Amino acid sequence: MADELPTAFIRRRLGSEDAHYGGNLVAGAKQLEVIGDLITELAMRYDGDEGLFRAYESVEFLHPLYAGDWIEAKGRIVSVGSSSRRCEFEVWKIGGPRSEVSESAAEFLEEPVLTCRAIGTTVVPKDHQRFAH
Image (cartoon, rainbow, N blue to C red; front, side, top):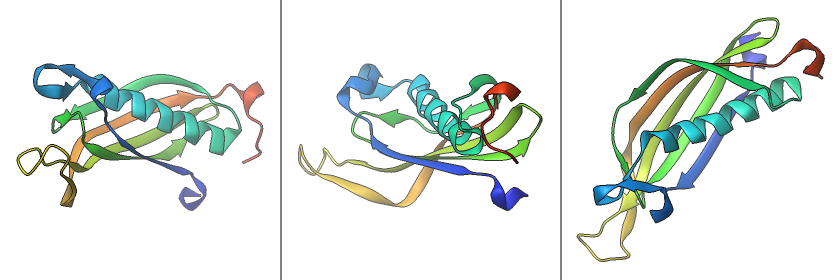
């Protein structure tokens, strides 16, 4: 059954509008926003409904992110209850600006850096579940 559980993926660049603190530091809440989009996609793929993000079991911020960084975020459903779906997430920094080279220089990292890891649960009420499992 684990092979049937969906995964989701997002890649995006963090812009200056995402910077919240001095030095163009991006708040960890931005990573949680991306995870929220992933868990919504997972519920849509599995149940045909956006569901409701119920709770985080754990969240670890492991590396800072800055405006101009490129990230990839991945999520997957790891277990399913009658209406709950437990999901795991990772956010990886995959590239960023190289302002020491020039103001427009940028590059992708040879080795991505794990910036956030989280586990959370979404709930899709039975009467909203559109797909048989």
